[in-house]
Image (cartoon, rainbow, N blue to C red; front, top):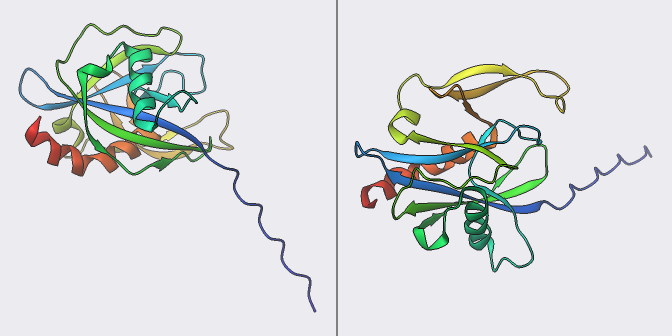
Length: 186
């Protein structure tokens, strides 16, 4: 009888994190998402993301995590946000996180963000019309020290010189049906 094939080791438990997708109407009336640009030096330095991070023991739930992180990272007070949808969690591909996204309508959009400089370099607003426009998606070869070789990935270039890609783009893709549905009431 041949030896049994080894059973693959199970994946370690995923850490929980939550992000807030702040949404508001721009001056022109279009729906906008607010993103953050992570400060250089960290694992995701210079990349676009949503305000968010690890769940902490003091957080009542993952919604509280998303709101706390948004307040810490960009100064968005929880009283200034109405959570309008909770999306299914999205797993990271390399860092073993399960990320829980929450769509939050900003009661009064602000351009006066209070950035946590150690983590956040800037804030970028992008219209939903742009994200869903024809021909905005491209494929680009990216390379990172943790990747064994460069990879061809989907990206959306922004006029700011930033690229939307990876987990942030996957969260946006999952959120688009809800954003267009929710957008009517925002």
